[in-house]
Length: 422
Image (tube, rainbow, N blue to C red; front, side, top):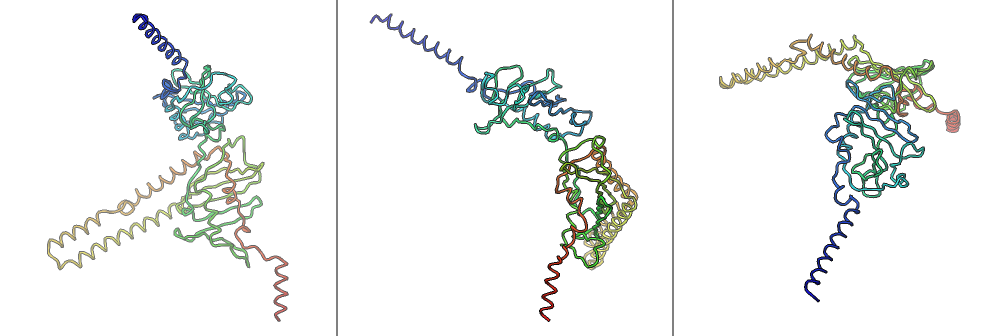
Protein backbone atom coordinates (compact mmCIF):
# COMPACT_ATOMS: atom_id res chain seq x y z
CA UNK A 1 0.00 0.00 0.00
CA UNK A 2 1.14 3.47 -0.81
CA UNK A 3 2.55 5.06 2.41
CA UNK A 4 0.61 8.23 1.78
CA UNK A 5 -2.68 6.29 1.57
CA UNK A 6 -1.75 4.33 4.70
CA UNK A 7 -1.16 7.48 6.77
CA UNK A 8 -4.30 9.04 5.33
CA UNK A 9 -6.35 6.06 6.51
CA UNK A 10 -4.80 6.30 9.99
CA UNK A 11 -5.57 10.02 10.15
CA UNK A 12 -9.16 9.45 9.05
CA UNK A 13 -9.59 6.77 11.73
CA UNK A 14 -8.23 9.07 14.45
CA UNK A 15 -10.59 11.86 13.40
CA UNK A 16 -13.49 9.41 13.46
CA UNK A 17 -12.57 8.23 16.97
CA UNK A 18 -12.32 11.81 18.24
CA UNK A 19 -15.68 12.66 16.69
CA UNK A 20 -17.27 9.55 18.20
CA UNK A 21 -15.85 10.37 21.63
CA UNK A 22 -17.11 13.97 21.41
CA UNK A 23 -20.61 12.86 20.42
CA UNK A 24 -20.69 10.28 23.18
CA UNK A 25 -19.46 12.81 25.76
CA UNK A 26 -22.00 15.42 24.77
CA UNK A 27 -24.84 12.92 25.17
CA UNK A 28 -23.50 11.44 28.42
CA UNK A 29 -25.45 12.41 31.60
CA UNK A 30 -23.75 15.04 33.72
CA UNK A 31 -24.03 12.78 36.75
CA UNK A 32 -20.53 11.39 36.23
CA UNK A 33 -18.42 14.53 35.97
CA UNK A 34 -19.81 18.03 35.57
CA UNK A 35 -22.86 17.65 37.82
CA UNK A 36 -20.94 16.19 40.72
CA UNK A 37 -20.19 18.60 43.58
CA UNK A 38 -22.21 21.31 41.87
CA UNK A 39 -24.15 23.47 44.34
CA UNK A 40 -27.88 22.73 44.13
CA UNK A 41 -28.98 26.28 44.98
CA UNK A 42 -26.17 28.71 44.12
CA UNK A 43 -28.51 31.67 44.72
CA UNK A 44 -28.87 30.58 48.35
CA UNK A 45 -25.24 29.73 48.95
CA UNK A 46 -23.80 32.03 51.65
CA UNK A 47 -27.09 33.98 51.76
CA UNK A 48 -28.99 31.87 54.29
CA UNK A 49 -29.46 34.83 56.63
CA UNK A 50 -31.16 36.83 53.87
CA UNK A 51 -34.14 34.45 53.71
CA UNK A 52 -37.15 36.07 55.39
CA UNK A 53 -39.95 33.67 54.48
CA UNK A 54 -40.43 30.01 53.65
CA UNK A 55 -43.64 28.73 52.07
CA UNK A 56 -44.37 25.02 51.76
CA UNK A 57 -47.10 24.00 49.33
CA UNK A 58 -48.45 20.47 48.94
CA UNK A 59 -50.82 18.46 46.77
CA UNK A 60 -53.69 20.34 45.18
CA UNK A 61 -51.63 23.54 45.43
CA UNK A 62 -52.54 23.78 49.12
CA UNK A 63 -50.32 25.94 51.30
CA UNK A 64 -49.19 23.72 54.16
CA UNK A 65 -46.89 26.00 56.14
CA UNK A 66 -45.90 29.65 55.93
CA UNK A 67 -42.89 30.64 58.00
CA UNK A 68 -41.96 34.29 58.33
CA UNK A 69 -39.13 36.10 60.05
CA UNK A 70 -40.43 38.84 62.32
CA UNK A 71 -38.65 41.63 64.15
CA UNK A 72 -37.29 39.22 66.76
CA UNK A 73 -38.05 35.62 65.84
CA UNK A 74 -39.57 33.41 63.19
CA UNK A 75 -43.30 32.66 63.38
CA UNK A 76 -45.71 30.19 61.80
CA UNK A 77 -47.85 32.70 59.92
CA UNK A 78 -50.69 30.30 59.12
CA UNK A 79 -50.98 29.42 62.85
CA UNK A 80 -51.74 32.97 63.98
CA UNK A 81 -48.03 33.85 64.15
CA UNK A 82 -47.25 31.25 66.80
CA UNK A 83 -43.47 31.15 67.53
CA UNK A 84 -41.63 28.85 65.13
CA UNK A 85 -38.95 26.30 65.92
CA UNK A 86 -35.87 28.31 65.01
CA UNK A 87 -33.52 25.33 65.23
CA UNK A 88 -35.61 23.42 62.69
CA UNK A 89 -35.69 26.36 60.27
CA UNK A 90 -31.92 26.79 60.53
CA UNK A 91 -31.41 23.09 59.95
CA UNK A 92 -33.47 23.18 56.74
CA UNK A 93 -31.75 26.29 55.34
CA UNK A 94 -28.27 24.97 56.11
CA UNK A 95 -29.07 21.63 54.46
CA UNK A 96 -30.33 23.43 51.37
CA UNK A 97 -27.29 25.70 51.35
CA UNK A 98 -24.91 22.75 51.55
CA UNK A 99 -26.76 20.47 49.11
CA UNK A 100 -24.95 19.49 45.94
CA UNK A 101 -26.10 17.78 42.75
CA UNK A 102 -25.20 14.11 42.71
CA UNK A 103 -26.86 12.94 39.53
CA UNK A 104 -28.98 14.08 36.60
CA UNK A 105 -32.38 12.34 36.62
CA UNK A 106 -35.39 12.33 34.33
CA UNK A 107 -36.67 15.29 32.34
CA UNK A 108 -39.78 13.39 31.25
CA UNK A 109 -42.89 14.78 33.03
CA UNK A 110 -44.48 11.32 32.81
CA UNK A 111 -41.81 10.01 35.19
CA UNK A 112 -41.82 12.87 37.71
CA UNK A 113 -44.33 11.17 40.02
CA UNK A 114 -41.96 8.24 40.57
CA UNK A 115 -39.46 10.66 42.08
CA UNK A 116 -42.07 12.81 43.85
CA UNK A 117 -41.16 15.92 41.84
CA UNK A 118 -44.35 16.30 39.83
CA UNK A 119 -46.27 19.59 39.91
CA UNK A 120 -47.98 20.03 43.28
CA UNK A 121 -51.05 21.30 41.47
CA UNK A 122 -51.82 17.61 41.02
CA UNK A 123 -54.19 16.31 43.67
CA UNK A 124 -52.06 13.23 44.32
CA UNK A 125 -48.64 14.93 44.26
CA UNK A 126 -46.26 13.52 46.88
CA UNK A 127 -43.66 16.28 46.89
CA UNK A 128 -43.58 19.76 48.44
CA UNK A 129 -42.97 23.02 46.60
CA UNK A 130 -40.62 25.23 48.60
CA UNK A 131 -40.43 28.98 48.05
CA UNK A 132 -37.69 31.04 49.66
CA UNK A 133 -38.02 34.82 49.64
CA UNK A 134 -35.72 37.59 50.83
CA UNK A 135 -33.09 36.76 48.20
CA UNK A 136 -32.55 39.01 45.17
CA UNK A 137 -34.82 36.60 43.32
CA UNK A 138 -37.25 34.16 44.99
CA UNK A 139 -36.26 30.50 44.78
CA UNK A 140 -38.89 27.88 43.98
CA UNK A 141 -38.23 24.16 43.80
CA UNK A 142 -39.97 20.87 44.47
CA UNK A 143 -38.55 18.50 47.05
CA UNK A 144 -39.47 14.95 46.19
CA UNK A 145 -38.77 11.52 47.63
CA UNK A 146 -35.78 10.56 49.70
CA UNK A 147 -33.63 8.09 47.79
CA UNK A 148 -33.46 5.69 50.71
CA UNK A 149 -33.12 2.54 48.67
CA UNK A 150 -30.60 4.01 46.27
CA UNK A 151 -27.76 5.17 48.46
CA UNK A 152 -29.23 8.36 49.92
CA UNK A 153 -29.96 11.83 48.64
CA UNK A 154 -33.23 13.53 47.75
CA UNK A 155 -34.91 14.08 44.39
CA UNK A 156 -35.36 17.77 43.53
CA UNK A 157 -36.64 19.77 40.55
CA UNK A 158 -36.57 23.54 40.11
CA UNK A 159 -39.99 25.00 39.32
CA UNK A 160 -40.18 25.79 35.59
CA UNK A 161 -37.30 23.44 34.74
CA UNK A 162 -37.93 20.06 33.15
CA UNK A 163 -34.70 18.58 34.48
CA UNK A 164 -34.82 16.76 37.82
CA UNK A 165 -31.84 15.95 40.02
CA UNK A 166 -30.65 13.76 42.83
CA UNK A 167 -29.23 16.09 45.47
CA UNK A 168 -27.14 15.27 48.51
CA UNK A 169 -28.62 15.10 51.98
CA UNK A 170 -32.05 14.45 53.46
CA UNK A 171 -34.03 17.45 52.26
CA UNK A 172 -37.58 16.21 52.85
CA UNK A 173 -39.67 18.65 54.92
CA UNK A 174 -42.41 18.32 57.55
CA UNK A 175 -45.84 18.96 56.05
CA UNK A 176 -47.81 19.94 59.18
CA UNK A 177 -47.73 23.44 60.64
CA UNK A 178 -47.54 22.00 64.17
CA UNK A 179 -44.27 20.32 63.23
CA UNK A 180 -42.71 23.78 62.74
CA UNK A 181 -43.97 25.28 66.00
CA UNK A 182 -41.81 25.82 69.06
CA UNK A 183 -43.81 23.61 71.40
CA UNK A 184 -41.37 23.39 74.28
CA UNK A 185 -43.46 25.01 77.01
CA UNK A 186 -41.66 24.66 80.32
CA UNK A 187 -39.07 22.53 82.09
CA UNK A 188 -39.28 22.71 85.88
CA UNK A 189 -38.01 19.75 87.92
CA UNK A 190 -40.41 18.23 90.43
CA UNK A 191 -37.91 18.90 93.24
CA UNK A 192 -38.70 22.62 92.99
CA UNK A 193 -42.34 22.23 94.03
CA UNK A 194 -43.63 22.23 97.59
CA UNK A 195 -47.25 21.39 96.72
CA UNK A 196 -49.58 20.48 93.87
CA UNK A 197 -53.34 20.82 94.12
CA UNK A 198 -55.65 19.26 91.53
CA UNK A 199 -59.36 20.02 91.33
CA UNK A 200 -61.70 17.93 89.19
CA UNK A 201 -64.67 19.26 87.22
CA UNK A 202 -66.94 18.64 90.24
CA UNK A 203 -64.79 20.59 92.70
CA UNK A 204 -63.15 17.66 94.49
CA UNK A 205 -59.51 18.28 95.31
CA UNK A 206 -56.33 16.25 95.64
CA UNK A 207 -53.32 17.85 97.28
CA UNK A 208 -49.81 16.50 97.60
CA UNK A 209 -47.02 18.32 99.41
CA UNK A 210 -43.54 18.23 100.92
CA UNK A 211 -42.68 19.33 104.44
CA UNK A 212 -39.18 20.43 103.47
CA UNK A 213 -37.32 21.24 100.27
CA UNK A 214 -35.00 18.25 100.54
CA UNK A 215 -37.73 15.63 101.00
CA UNK A 216 -37.51 12.78 98.52
CA UNK A 217 -41.24 12.11 98.15
CA UNK A 218 -44.50 14.03 98.23
CA UNK A 219 -47.20 13.22 100.79
CA UNK A 220 -50.93 13.05 100.15
CA UNK A 221 -53.02 15.44 102.22
CA UNK A 222 -56.33 14.45 103.83
CA UNK A 223 -56.16 10.71 103.16
CA UNK A 224 -59.62 9.28 103.98
CA UNK A 225 -59.88 7.40 107.25
CA UNK A 226 -59.23 3.69 106.83
CA UNK A 227 -57.52 4.11 103.44
CA UNK A 228 -53.85 3.77 102.45
CA UNK A 229 -51.68 5.29 99.74
CA UNK A 230 -50.94 2.81 96.96
CA UNK A 231 -47.23 3.65 97.03
CA UNK A 232 -45.00 6.24 98.64
CA UNK A 233 -43.85 7.16 95.12
CA UNK A 234 -47.32 7.57 93.57
CA UNK A 235 -47.74 11.28 94.50
CA UNK A 236 -44.43 12.14 92.80
CA UNK A 237 -45.99 11.64 89.36
CA UNK A 238 -48.19 14.70 89.89
CA UNK A 239 -45.13 16.95 90.17
CA UNK A 240 -43.58 15.65 86.95
CA UNK A 241 -46.07 17.36 84.61
CA UNK A 242 -44.02 20.54 84.17
CA UNK A 243 -40.72 18.74 83.68
CA UNK A 244 -39.80 18.78 79.96
CA UNK A 245 -43.37 19.66 79.00
CA UNK A 246 -43.73 19.82 75.22
CA UNK A 247 -47.12 20.43 73.63
CA UNK A 248 -48.32 18.64 70.52
CA UNK A 249 -49.97 21.72 69.02
CA UNK A 250 -51.04 25.27 69.83
CA UNK A 251 -54.11 27.26 68.84
CA UNK A 252 -55.27 30.77 69.70
CA UNK A 253 -57.25 30.75 72.94
CA UNK A 254 -59.82 33.01 71.27
CA UNK A 255 -60.67 30.32 68.76
CA UNK A 256 -60.33 27.50 71.30
CA UNK A 257 -61.54 28.84 74.68
CA UNK A 258 -61.85 26.76 77.81
CA UNK A 259 -65.33 25.24 78.32
CA UNK A 260 -67.43 25.78 81.44
CA UNK A 261 -66.32 22.49 83.00
CA UNK A 262 -62.58 22.06 83.37
CA UNK A 263 -60.08 20.48 85.68
CA UNK A 264 -57.70 22.82 87.51
CA UNK A 265 -54.12 22.39 88.64
CA UNK A 266 -51.93 24.62 90.78
CA UNK A 267 -48.20 24.07 91.15
CA UNK A 268 -46.54 25.95 94.04
CA UNK A 269 -42.75 26.13 94.17
CA UNK A 270 -40.67 26.59 97.30
CA UNK A 271 -39.29 29.86 95.90
CA UNK A 272 -42.71 31.47 95.29
CA UNK A 273 -43.31 30.58 91.64
CA UNK A 274 -46.92 29.54 91.03
CA UNK A 275 -48.20 27.97 87.81
CA UNK A 276 -51.92 27.53 87.26
CA UNK A 277 -53.54 25.40 84.59
CA UNK A 278 -57.02 24.59 83.38
CA UNK A 279 -57.59 21.50 81.26
CA UNK A 280 -60.27 19.66 79.38
CA UNK A 281 -60.83 16.82 76.94
CA UNK A 282 -62.53 17.17 73.58
CA UNK A 283 -62.80 14.84 70.59
CA UNK A 284 -60.19 12.49 71.98
CA UNK A 285 -57.60 15.21 72.61
CA UNK A 286 -56.35 16.85 75.80
CA UNK A 287 -56.13 20.64 76.06
CA UNK A 288 -54.75 23.07 78.62
CA UNK A 289 -54.12 26.74 79.24
CA UNK A 290 -51.41 27.98 81.61
CA UNK A 291 -50.46 31.10 83.54
CA UNK A 292 -47.66 31.97 85.95
CA UNK A 293 -47.45 34.35 88.90
CA UNK A 294 -45.39 35.05 92.02
CA UNK A 295 -46.53 34.43 95.59
CA UNK A 296 -44.72 37.38 97.16
CA UNK A 297 -44.97 36.14 100.75
CA UNK A 298 -43.59 32.69 99.92
CA UNK A 299 -40.82 34.29 97.84
CA UNK A 300 -39.88 36.65 100.71
CA UNK A 301 -39.87 33.83 103.26
CA UNK A 302 -37.76 31.64 100.97
CA UNK A 303 -35.20 34.39 100.42
CA UNK A 304 -35.05 35.00 104.19
CA UNK A 305 -34.35 31.30 104.73
CA UNK A 306 -31.72 31.20 101.99
CA UNK A 307 -29.96 34.26 103.37
CA UNK A 308 -30.01 32.77 106.87
CA UNK A 309 -28.38 29.59 105.50
CA UNK A 310 -25.76 31.63 103.65
CA UNK A 311 -25.00 33.65 106.78
CA UNK A 312 -24.71 30.53 108.94
CA UNK A 313 -22.42 28.85 106.39
CA UNK A 314 -20.24 31.96 106.17
CA UNK A 315 -19.97 32.27 109.95
CA UNK A 316 -19.05 28.59 110.18
CA UNK A 317 -16.25 29.09 107.65
CA UNK A 318 -14.90 32.11 109.54
CA UNK A 319 -15.07 30.27 112.87
CA UNK A 320 -13.23 27.30 111.41
CA UNK A 321 -10.50 29.56 110.03
CA UNK A 322 -10.15 31.44 113.32
CA UNK A 323 -9.95 28.18 115.23
CA UNK A 324 -7.18 26.97 112.97
CA UNK A 325 -5.22 30.18 113.56
CA UNK A 326 -5.65 29.87 117.32
CA UNK A 327 -4.47 26.25 117.26
CA UNK A 328 -1.35 27.17 115.34
CA UNK A 329 -0.26 30.16 117.43
CA UNK A 330 2.54 28.03 118.80
CA UNK A 331 4.12 27.88 115.35
CA UNK A 332 6.59 30.43 114.03
CA UNK A 333 5.52 34.02 113.73
CA UNK A 334 5.68 33.82 109.97
CA UNK A 335 3.32 30.88 109.85
CA UNK A 336 0.94 32.50 112.29
CA UNK A 337 0.90 35.64 110.16
CA UNK A 338 0.19 33.54 107.08
CA UNK A 339 -2.66 31.74 108.81
CA UNK A 340 -4.09 35.01 110.07
CA UNK A 341 -4.03 36.31 106.51
CA UNK A 342 -5.93 33.22 105.35
CA UNK A 343 -8.56 33.78 108.03
CA UNK A 344 -8.84 37.40 106.95
CA UNK A 345 -9.47 36.34 103.34
CA UNK A 346 -12.31 34.10 104.47
CA UNK A 347 -13.75 37.02 106.40
CA UNK A 348 -13.55 39.31 103.37
CA UNK A 349 -15.03 36.80 100.90
CA UNK A 350 -18.57 37.44 102.00
CA UNK A 351 -21.40 36.16 99.80
CA UNK A 352 -23.80 38.83 98.60
CA UNK A 353 -26.49 37.44 100.89
CA UNK A 354 -24.25 38.47 103.81
CA UNK A 355 -22.45 41.54 102.49
CA UNK A 356 -25.53 43.18 100.94
CA UNK A 357 -28.78 41.32 101.80
CA UNK A 358 -30.98 43.95 100.15
CA UNK A 359 -29.17 43.70 96.83
CA UNK A 360 -29.20 39.90 97.06
CA UNK A 361 -32.95 39.93 97.72
CA UNK A 362 -33.61 42.21 94.76
CA UNK A 363 -31.53 40.07 92.41
CA UNK A 364 -33.43 36.95 93.45
CA UNK A 365 -36.81 38.67 93.01
CA UNK A 366 -35.74 40.07 89.63
CA UNK A 367 -34.74 36.59 88.47
CA UNK A 368 -38.10 35.15 89.54
CA UNK A 369 -40.08 37.95 87.87
CA UNK A 370 -38.05 37.55 84.68
CA UNK A 371 -38.79 33.83 84.64
CA UNK A 372 -42.50 34.48 85.16
CA UNK A 373 -42.56 37.05 82.35
CA UNK A 374 -40.87 34.56 80.02
CA UNK A 375 -43.36 31.85 80.92
CA UNK A 376 -46.38 34.11 80.45
CA UNK A 377 -45.05 35.26 77.10
CA UNK A 378 -45.11 31.60 76.08
CA UNK A 379 -48.48 30.84 77.74
CA UNK A 380 -50.66 33.92 77.19
CA UNK A 381 -53.28 33.72 74.47
CA UNK A 382 -52.78 30.06 73.58
CA UNK A 383 -54.51 26.75 74.10
CA UNK A 384 -52.12 23.82 74.00
CA UNK A 385 -52.73 20.24 72.99
CA UNK A 386 -50.94 18.09 75.56
CA UNK A 387 -49.54 14.56 75.40
CA UNK A 388 -51.98 12.17 77.06
CA UNK A 389 -49.51 11.00 79.69
CA UNK A 390 -48.95 14.58 80.86
CA UNK A 391 -52.64 15.40 80.97
CA UNK A 392 -53.35 12.20 82.89
CA UNK A 393 -51.11 13.39 85.72
CA UNK A 394 -52.95 16.72 85.72
CA UNK A 395 -56.29 14.99 86.18
CA UNK A 396 -55.52 12.51 88.96
CA UNK A 397 -58.00 12.10 91.82
CA UNK A 398 -57.72 10.87 95.40
CA UNK A 399 -58.81 7.39 94.32
CA UNK A 400 -55.80 7.21 92.00
CA UNK A 401 -53.50 7.68 95.02
CA UNK A 402 -55.08 5.00 97.22
CA UNK A 403 -55.01 1.25 97.42
CA UNK A 404 -58.27 -0.18 96.06
CA UNK A 405 -60.92 -1.13 98.56
CA UNK A 406 -61.40 -4.87 99.04
CA UNK A 407 -64.36 -6.18 97.07
CA UNK A 408 -67.48 -7.47 98.81
CA UNK A 409 -66.59 -10.96 97.60
CA UNK A 410 -63.16 -10.70 99.23
CA UNK A 411 -64.72 -9.46 102.49
CA UNK A 412 -67.22 -12.34 102.45
CA UNK A 413 -64.45 -14.86 101.82
CA UNK A 414 -62.34 -13.39 104.64
CA UNK A 415 -65.35 -13.58 107.01
CA UNK A 416 -66.03 -17.23 106.13
CA UNK A 417 -62.36 -18.13 106.61
CA UNK A 418 -62.31 -16.44 110.01
CA UNK A 419 -65.50 -18.19 111.02
CA UNK A 420 -64.17 -21.58 109.88
CA UNK A 421 -61.02 -21.09 111.99
CA UNK A 422 -63.18 -20.63 115.07
